Amino acid sequence: MRFKGKAWKFGKDIDTDQIIPARYLNTSDPKELAKHCMEDADPEFVKKMQAGDIIVADKNFGCGSSREHAPISIKAAGISCVIAKSFARIFYRNSFNMGLPILECPEAVDSINESDEIEVDIDTGKIVNLTKNKTFNSQPIPPFMQELINTGGLMEWVKKKVKA
Amino acid sequence: MPMTITEKILAEHAGLKEVVPGQLINAKVDIALGNDITAPIAIKEFRESGAKKVYDKEKVVLVPDHFTPNKDIKSAEQCKILREFAKEQELTNYFEGGDVGVEHALLPEKGIVLPGDLVIGADSHTCTYGALGAFATGVGSTDLAACMVTGEAWFKVPESIKFIYKGKLNKWVDGKDLILYAIGKIGVDGALYKAMEFCGDTIENLSMDSRLSMCNMAIEAGGKNGIIAPDKITEDYVKERAKRKYKFYSSDKDAKYSQIFEYDTAKIAPQVAFPNLPENTRNITDVGDVPIDQVVIGSCTNGRMEDLRIAAMILKGKKVAKYVRLIVIPATPLIYKQAVDEGLFDIFLDAGAIISPPTCGPCLGGHMGVLAEGERAIATTNRNFIGRMGHPKSEVYLSNPAVAAASAVKGRIAHPDEVMK
Ligand code: SF4
Image 1 (cartoon, rainbow over the protein chains, first blue to last red):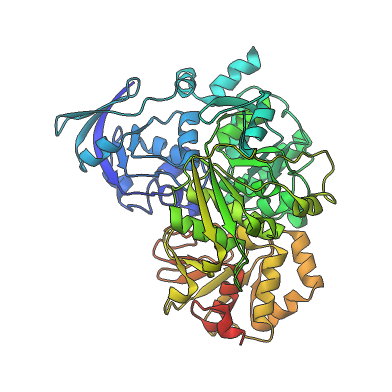
Image 2 (image 1 turned 135 degrees about the vertical axis):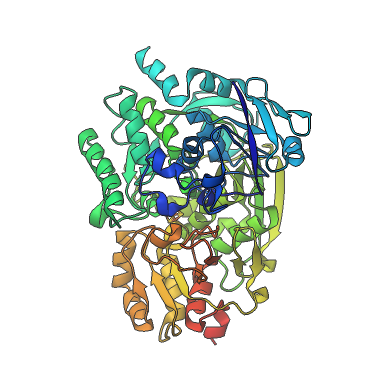
């Protein structure tokens, strides 16, 4: 899988309350959640971004609650991929379980400025900053997680098990 | 091979003799928990999988506690999904109305989670149950859905960090301060993906309520789980509550740790975490003049009997400062009743407090005390992120119940000694 899009930069420790504030958690409808994506980090974000764009953040992205509403809102808003220096544990897990591509790559994060054009290859973990003409290799995704992605997420994996 | 308590519990539930950090395992789950925010997604995914029955109706636990009593139509709809599912699946452990409490206070209290268990919960503070000597960790709704079907969950075995606390607690210091202190030292990702094992003579003498509030905040350091080896205090807590067998595990002497921290409790004063991260801790003596609009005493961190008793001790015969709202939220119906029986409600009401039914409520800015723009609260909860208790431009400071109660009286963040002369 390959994506090309514009980078939106965020700082460190972006928590799930900033990604999708709890005041919107009385629904789990992706379309509703998408409307408020990143709202408490940048209230204008949803208006500015376009489908296919990429979120680039510092360390510990997605810390805080276990709400899957966070990766759901990012995915439903049309973000193709999140690159960060590191991810909080449950967010990392949730993203794989539901098929939001995420990559850990501190060097790429440091080199990317807001609005840079970025190309990402999920299979190889290669990140190219087209604006700056620089290439980075992110941490490889563990084989079991690759299997999850290839089967289409955890529930697809479970469905197979149910049938078997 | 020597193993930590976390590794032993994971190995046992994966049906393996031993496990090592980094290893991916599939493990059997003793208790799988969901709430009114996370369970609706899990239930939808469960249905889409084609499964008909949950793997064990005793083990899937649903607790609608976040926006209950239903704060609006949408939350009522979410709760209805849980209720109908619980009815259909005949779940033993479904709680609502006068039976519901904040999940992480409720499950230990009812003996649903026991020592040696492997617990997953679609709620990040599931790590609370480590206080009982269980492996407990927060997951997402999809993990919960998968577990409801298969009874299993995948894990990467975490490395463990050992936190040794030595010495007696200073006055007005409890478990909340011990954990805030550690988070202040290592940061909000200081234990990312790792197990946090708490030990030392301080912990051995620590009450169960304080142990629960410590393990509760392991996630605030990025930890996968917090854990305390079960002992006599654990035994006294669980023996009356348990309806099934449980098992005590402990770390081997020569088990491997990725890091070891040692803290001298003589140096630990009551802690206050400044906005907007739990790592922004200061000693209460270094806080300065911080006026407040609201005080919240409650949540899965500090809404238990010990917490309410300390707050009442400080508030007895005093008044909440003018223009300040003090909201007290007993975490479960049992705690609520016990607080009434012990006369704590009289003290709170005479002081001018508002008493809420058990709910998460303001802890996540849900209801029952949401903040306006520019308002500031001190709370015994666990998170002070931007907008956590309401408006994105409001502020939350975290503390133990003694500091929170004293602050309510003074109308600014205050040391308990200031009101207990
Ligand atoms: S009390 Fe707060 S932290 Fe605890 S489960 Fe409820 S919302 Fe989460």
